[in-house]
Length: 294
Image 1 (cartoon, rainbow, N blue to C red):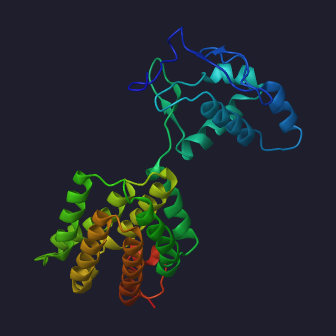
Image 2 (cartoon, helix red, strand yellow):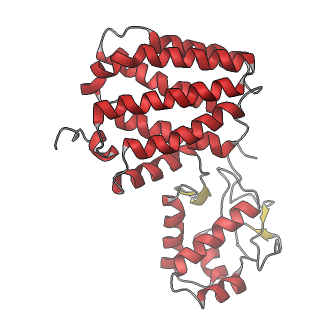
Image 3 (cartoon, rainbow, N blue to C red):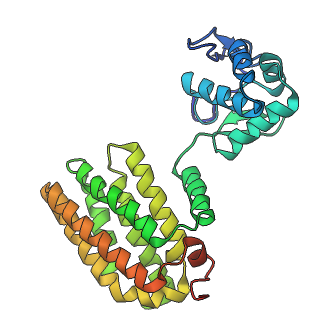
């Protein structure tokens, strides 16, 4: 059962945590017996960071057993007994997994650690934080974005259905239309990025799709909501719409090479436009409105 998750209170639920490479014995989720205690003991002798090792064991268990969002993990008491570590270590390990977006803590009578899953939103937040701390610039983003976008558009040839084509054409037309106010322009900018994430949604490669989603999300957060610059974006909106329409036409023809060439041109054009607006300041400065400070 995935809709509501498998409850820790369900007596028929059986799970196991691998010991030293095998799948391990089947174990009741309420007791957590069978968690890789001997394997953990060997690892602990080489590393002082016990909580990270426990977190790694829990992560491996989730993946190996095919647990999904909503599935309940063994409770705190069971983990303490199975791993042979303190309550503080278990809580630190669970907090580490919670920060990573893999586990969430459920409250209430049947509360405890629950699988939260991990997707593009968690990756977006983590990579966006990295970009801010490392002073990543527009140049850095577009070096990576161009690489992925060109490969993406080749990968979706033959995978785009009619409903997606119609949505792409709608988004391209929205980009090309004149914007009467800042709110309309903001929506246009978000639609321009949605064009790319919509194409990504048809990719057979889930990792490529996630990377496009993450890079677009970073740019939306840093630039599309910068209302003070929307009047400058208006100057090239029509050009964005033209590129988008031509990319859709190439995909309809099944011409992946033409679509890729157009996408590479489009990425170069978009890169130059943002350079003109923001220069070489970091994404953090753009997001915080500090691009005029120097």
